[in-house]
Image (tube, rainbow, N blue to C red; front, side, top):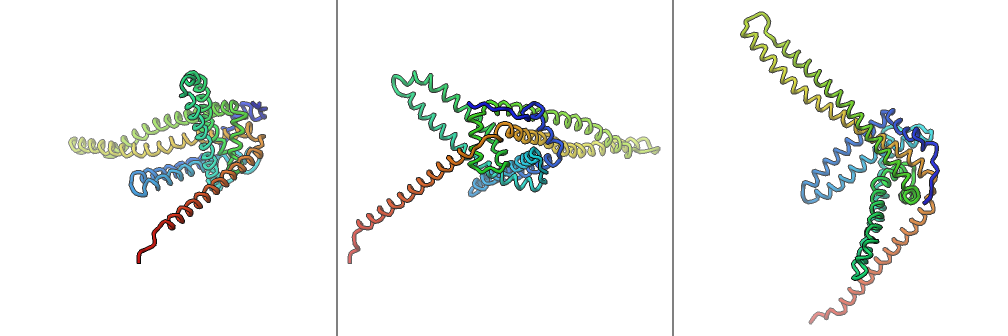
Amino acid sequence: MQTSTPSPTAEPGGFLSALEALRSPANLILVALTAILALIVLALAMTGFAHGGVGPTFGLLMLVLAWLVGEAGYCGVTLRRLQISRGQLPTGVIGSATSGFFAAIKVLLAMLLLCVAVLILMLAASLLFLVTQIPGIGPALNYLVFPIVALIVGVALYALLFIAAPLAAVAACDGRSVFGIVATVVLVIRSRLFDTALRGVLLNLMAVFVIALALLIVSLGVATSGALQQMVHIGHSSYSQMGGYGSDMYGALGGMGGMGGGMLGALAGLRSVGAAAVVLYFLAFSLGFVVYASGWVVIFNDTARDLDPAALEAQMRTQAERVQQKAREAQARAAQLAREHAAKSDDRTPPPQA
């Protein structure tokens, strides 16, 4: 396994530089707005799945679009952090969202290719398990085959879910092609898997800590401010509705009416507090995504920037062209067989009687 030499940004201080992304309100706005749009599109997808006919197809398309919209915000923050790390001026929110959407499309295509590779690995594992069914030596081979297959499949799935996806986003924002993204991810997993996985775990812990800290601050603020607001509303309503120096009975009734109006006002205030709290909690989670996206830029610069995926990318393009050529040959051969079968059927058809 190839060993990597950490760059200066690989030090703890450099890794914690991902927190600098929180200083820019544009990153938070970008993630929050795209997440809201993604939730709206996701609601449309659920509506499509609930109806019959073309509803499931529409729902599937909306589901893919929702993922692309959410990934566009993530890639937008990644693009801005890449530009800052290179000493460039980051683009605006709209420009980052637009560029992030096109980068998200490349990420989707690259992840589909990587999923196909994992499926091929699963097929090979299934063939190995068929070998363990051979009478006599099969049960003995299973003690050797099963641990190896379980380890390889576990590493492949972990790399696909927790390393390939975030690295693909950074590589797409770096301007690499779909095959270039796949080649970069494969090279990182092949040569620097442990280093990248360890950094990813540390980044996950840091993002979770940021979310937990933001949730704690928001919860304290919402609870205290909500209680103060309700006390002010109830006291103001009851004071304004009190009966003055008239009859004691009328004054008491007026006081009861004031308290009732205060309680109704409190209920309305609780609804407004709940709506505002949802927005604050949503922003708290958005802070974690901003840190996560910025942190993977640091990991990419430390583990993948000095790798040259050109040779592997060229090899993958050659293999893809061979697969396409074989597919075209098979299609032409099938069309030729179909024409020959149709010609034989016409020859066997008896002539019509006069």
